[in-house]
Length: 360
Image (spheres, rainbow, N blue to C red):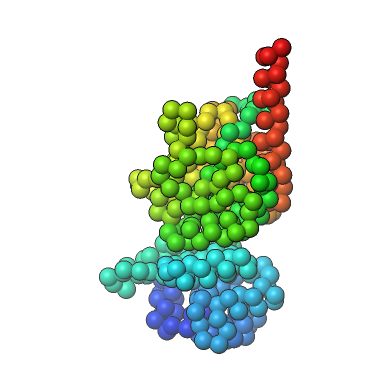
């Protein structure tokens, strides 16, 4: 198999050297060149034909955002990974880059006591994203071997919507959440794999363009219709019934599937709390987080919708759910919000019809 060719764009000599050395030891990846600014990068792309570009945000001349805009005009399908800092400003600009078509992002190492540790941090985060975005990884990890789920009852009422996503997720959420109507009758809980600060800015961005209220999750918050709660970075998000009410809870228990927040953690809790009255959606993302949780939801009688491969940036997570036999519907990104609304309304109508029949 041919190696993945990477062009590194960063104005810092130290960072360029760090990235080159970190990726040099990664099998199947070859750094074919570096560039110290956006203009040089744009000149080198047709010469080097890279498969992936890592792009710094803050650079003299053409900055990362300006360079990304030009890359998207000239090479709309070329994967671009933004290389950002874990700061408020870095997170805000990264969110803007993702909305403008960046494929993913990686964060620069912080609090590293040695060059070797910094290189390992970069290698662990960046290599998996590079191979996933180029499809050169020899396939995602296979879905876990799990039993076939129970069939979902037709017209089953929906009392909560749970969504899990990762790579490509901010834009996918931006295509789904704003399409939900203001009178959406159930609460929404979301896990998007992102670090702290990033998840808050994602919630703020979605809140600004949605009819629903979108916020980061907080322990003790009551789940009510018309609200969307996003798991904060570095915290698992769960739900639990307390009397007649259902509350949010956060914890920092160990990561699952190398993730915190993890979709599996959220999905298990909604299955445990709501039983068959769950609708879950798994969208674009690398890895298999969500597959085991989807089985829990289906075993409880809930429904699972997944994004199709064609519209996913990476079909790892939704593909794992399909591979586990847990999906009952595969939709394009543009169809997902319509499918959600249809199922929730159908469940409400079915429940109303049953109640009316019982009164006769």
